[in-house]
Image (cartoon, rainbow, N blue to C red):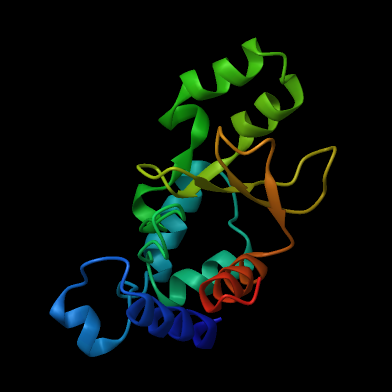
Length: 167
């Protein structure tokens, strides 16, 4: 995953959509210092869940990552992630009140790992009775439903393709 994130960083410099710090430009890197295993374990205890391995791999590379564009979400340090129901109960309520019970139920179980202050959220959805595997959603109220990914790596590959104009 690190080579993908490094290439994304280079594409971010090429596109120059944001004002980056001198340190970011010199390092050609838009991530943070890696998270410690202890920090990850504390968050898992707080959330009462074992986070997916690919997300923990991401955290071992960078504990957060700058948004790739104006509409993509910023990945947050693991210490700040939480369930959407804790962060924005009203958001879930609105989806429920508009007759989208299934989506509201999934949103209520989701963990926000990116986009708390952005146009889109990136959500990790823990396994459940209905779905035995972790699910990965990019979600915004202006998208008709979720944009699902097979894995976090799939999301970053898709993002890299978008940044390069391969889409």
